[in-house]
Amino acid sequence: MKPRNSESQQKQIKIYGAIDSSGVYLIRDFLRRSVIDFELIDSISSPDLMAVGNFKNHAIAVEFPDGTFLFDPSLTEIANSLGWISQPKHAEYDVSIYGAGPAGLSAAVYAASEGLKTILIERDAIGGQAGTSSLIENYMGFPMGISGAELAERAREQALKFGAEILLLREGVKGMFGNNRICVTLTNGQKIVAKTNICATGVEYTKLGLKDEERLLNKGLYYGAGASEAFFCNSRDIFIVGGGNSAGQAVVYFSGFAKSVYMVIRKGELSDTLSYYLINRINKIANVKILYHSELTEIEGNDQLERVKISNRKENVDTWYETAKVFICVGGNPNTDWADCTPIIRNPSGYLITGADLIGTQAFENCWNLDRLPFHLETSVPGCFAAGDVRFNSVKRVASAVGEGAMAVTFVHQYLTATKY
Image (cartoon, rainbow, N blue to C red; front, side):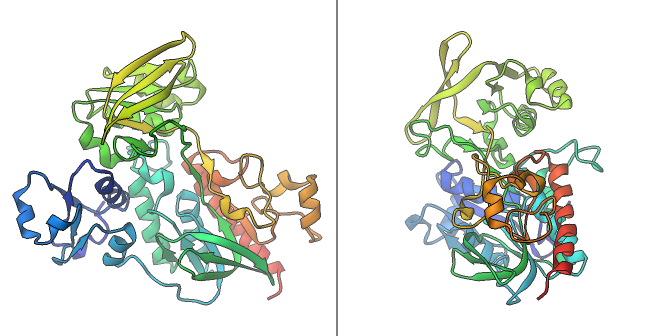
């Protein structure tokens, strides 16, 4: 698959900086997830930096194919220079979709292809958590597998082809419901008004709450297992914390680069949380070591991560390991803080409750005023739907999220047909 904008790129984007710094990591991870080809140039040792006259006053420089530079740029500035930042074209939409993971992208493709005025809003890179996956092997139609970034990029192109609008690096901070419409205010003050809404904001990896976790974030400690980091794991001992499929995929991928890959899981069996095909694959890799009944309990390092403590809860043994790379792929918390000031009902963990699961709750009886029952993917606010991992009782798989995104559009049609505007 060609990188995005490859037709217009005569040379790669170049990133100048300390290649293992947190700032450079954020940029290269964003570009990798966006399927953009780039070159890293070490600011410490590269003579090419002589061409960047103002570099001595900055930590990072990004050179674009047209020869222009950005110094210490934000991701928004980079996306804007690449032409990805756009403004809403309409005052009102048929459906607004929040979150461009598999569920949101699927909803955008189906909604736009069926003639609905569609806008998709994403606060980060296209693909969500799935976009960081090095290889998805159990998604129908790709017998050799496909990376999460490539799958997301194909879906983005498909949505745009049908006329969907996509707003990147935007985030909703306040939602209001009234007059059979949903109005969301973004962080930049813009307002998106739509007749219906599909929430596909997904989940975030759980933070472990360790001392120095924030200080060493992206300095050897990472949430998720972005493929952009694989090159920097050559000949190193690395740790992947988690026992789900995302962790298993990361173990398989990074084993091709690292000296040893330690998989840290709380359970005593991989089969409790991991797909069968991944278990078979992992068991055949010589440089993978599974640490059962174990947790990451301490991390240490000065400017970069240097060592970690792994605690075996069954044997009550603590072991320190030297390592510069740890990837946290543990569970997830739903991105639903935006619903705090709305009538949308969530379960105690924050997942959006939909359809039949709403019926019988006191909160639902107090807020639902329609004669009909909520549709299967509809929240406690009529016309507001949820799809994918953010939804209570959803199946946490890419294929399931794609299916729910498409199904949500069917209910959007039914709602629009039954509602007077």
